[in-house]
Image (cartoon, rainbow, N blue to C red; front, side):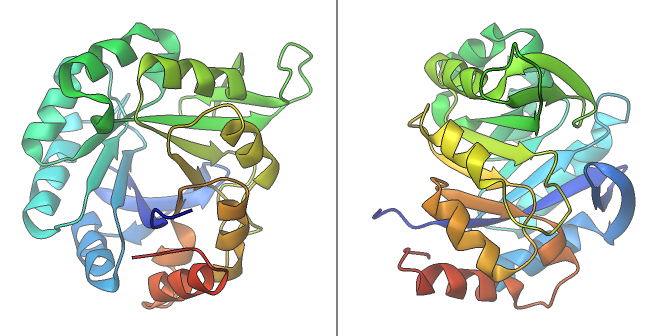
Length: 256
C-alpha cells in the first residue's frame, strides 16, 4: 500500500452544534463545529467530514453557514453530508466551500441520483455514506443490512451488494459506518470492512467504534484506505490525531 492513509475526524452537526452519541442515540454536545474543525486542521487531520444529523427535518441554512465559515478558515478537504438529495444540493455545497458531498438516504431511495451527480461533477466529489448493521434477515446474504435516517430505518438491502452497485454507478468513495459499533469505543467492525473491501475497488473509509489508537491499524489491515472517528477526537487529548498516526505508522502503513 503506497497511498498515505487518511485520518478523518467526523463532526456530527445538529442545529449548528457538534453532537455525539452511542449507536446514533443519546446525543450530547461536543462543541462548536468551526472551533473543532480549526483545532483538527492544526492537529494534522487529513480531511474533515461534516454530517448534518437532522438535515431531513432541520434548517439546512444552518449547515450551509457552518460549511461556508469553516471553508474560509480550514484548508484541508471538507466533506459534507446529511440531506443531500440532488445535483442542486451538491452544487450548493460545493459553492459554499465543500470539496466533497456525502449521500445516503436519497441514494437508497433513488440510486440514479448517484449517476446524475457524478456525471455532472465527477466521481471524486461524491461519497456514499453507508450505515450498516448486523442482521439475521435471510434476504441479506452478507449479514449486514443497509439502514437510513441515521441508522433508525432498516431497508432489507444487503450492504455489500449496495456498496458494489453504488461503486458501479460512480461514487468516488464509500464511508462505511457500523451502526452497532458506533460510539462504543470497542473497535471497528473488521468483518464488515473485509466484506465490503472484497466487493469494491473504490477507496473505503472505515467508521464506527474507534476508542483507542490501537484500534486503527486493524481497520487498515482489513482493507480501509482511510479511518474516520468522532468520540476519540472530540473527548480525547488534543494530540490524539498524532497518536493515531503514530500507531498507524508503527504498523508499517504510510501516513501524511
